[in-house]
Length: 127
Image (tube, rainbow, N blue to C red; front, side, top):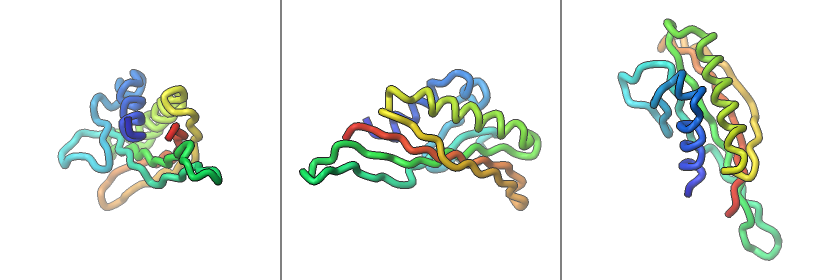
């Protein structure tokens, strides 16, 4: 299973998150006209753990998960969904060898009138 598939399963299988966004969890981009709030994730980087022998032992996959909400949702709703995303990521330990949460960035996109919160994480998986 790909790291993306494992992450998708972790996010879509986490009931507290799906209670907030339903099935609105997407890879890379979301369809135009989709209701908010929603989540989008994508792989940013992959670091291979490769000792001198040359065999790749593990991969550390860095993801960004972005939570979007419009003005009617408000920043507080986006933060609530982002917290559920973080909890879902931590619950994925076991499916991944380990999950390390990274930076978190909150943004107000004035022209689009969207709140977003970016959650970065590194997911370690067996090669």
